[in-house]
Image (cartoon, rainbow, N blue to C red; front, top):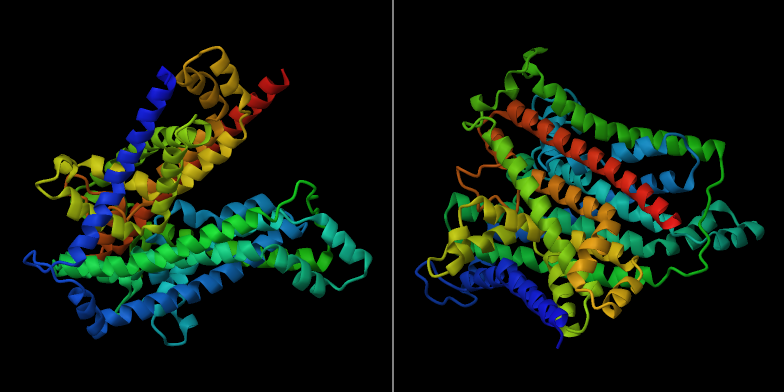
Length: 551
């Protein structure tokens, strides 16, 4: 065995150990806790039976499933119409409408719930739209989750619609087939896997989200808030672990369904596929522009409402201009420290996470030999997609807080928040890195091997420079999501590592809703700015790479 092969094998096994300690052993600790009594005795399935027998807790399962199905259906339908307008029409200002639709991705998950309180709450200026019904409950959660899921479903469906084969439509037009029949027999079958993928993604997000039900859920119980109430409110860790297991089951099923759908979707793409170019239509383009204006306007309204609420004295009685709510020391108790902590977490997650993710993807895609271990790394890298953030954070309590654990020194530090954030968002970044690495010609590694150059020199001097646009994409993704994360860190932060997202929840709970809106706006602007800067850098690097290849 050569030195290169030996070193690569050791690094591969180091990644296996990393995943083992980062989430596999913590999950085992969660399962173990769900089978124990508060005295540490083995209880078996008794805890699960008790949970199901409690009416308030047992109804959470039904509520969560019905809510997730409803939200997934609505958000998929709305996103499909929006994606259809962006890809199949010649309406003007498409880049603008696409950006407006993606606004919720840059905002903390609590922002839709905060905006809904000012729009449809008891003192909301548009509460009459609900016809006397309260926004606090299933209605508010449904609207908030639709806003949260819409951009994710839009990205999936836009990709699916852009892969349509123009030859099928040309054949239908030559046969003078009606527009409705073309849509029903050509368009929908061509994007069926995209629709299913968007639905499963929405289902997973809805059933695992904690922030929106916490703020605007009222008395409507769901699994995510049950875990929080059991652990934080009642200190009943065993029942919290049981609720975590119940929350994990539908997430895992949705994950496997999405993997199956993705494989089937990829197999429908052919080498001879001809991209479809939309044709101009006065009425069709006008309808598309009107629809996108309404949906995009709602996205702007959500952000604009929070901005407006953060800049007035006291809603709704004193609407004069004021910056008092941006004085975080008056509401959070720790002032701007929570915002600085979020910046530290996001920066560390982006730097460390990008390095780990890209190296792991390189081993999977470009590694030599060690096939079984590399496949194990790939499986371990994608599996966290099925783990809800609340379940991950709760499992970290049981695993890292144990005095017998040699890794106990991580507990209560910023390092454990960074680790949780990296693992929570690892799968998407891993897929981005693999996609970029697959586009690099294997000849580079072959030539390096023939010249007996160490693989790490090829990695640093060739692979990394070529893949810089993808590396920047991974870094910006990790930064934005670490900046807005809540569920993965809600159980493992301390007073010294308080984050902005946690402070927003605390502010809202203690009645400082306008201060929570102000901090949400700051996070939104920070994420949007980072995304803009990284996009500009990525475009410059791509242009430089193209010039290098032409030269």
